[in-house]
Image (tube, rainbow, N blue to C red; front, side):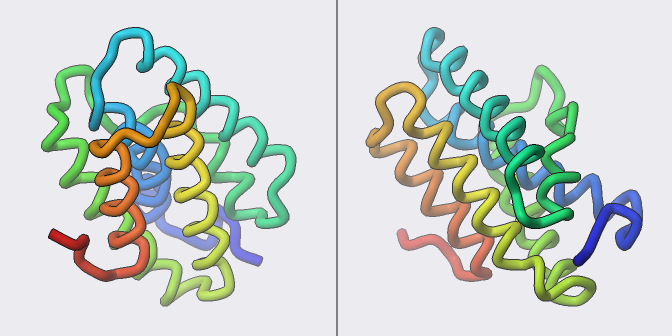
Length: 145
């Protein structure tokens, strides 16, 4: 089982950025003031649950993240491009260093993103598109146009 100590600080920060970025990408895909609060709460709850309940040591440690890796002035475009890159890079790192953790990471990130999408009703076309981009980045495939 992999843990934080098995990765460089840059690799770890990239994996964390992929996790929180996925939640943020879904949230900014359909901006609504009140929905944002619900989505942020859902992201936080998902992280807390993963810290306590995940079978993966890696996921439990990643769920301890305190920052997002993004600044307050990050645009939706920056969040999308940097999240997609972080997810692709994270999967590549895991495939090399901890291949047994790839599926746990994918499940954690997609579960978190889906949780955020469902927080404010979910089902929105923009949110579905964001989820597709996240899944594609985790799988290494390009999103459908």
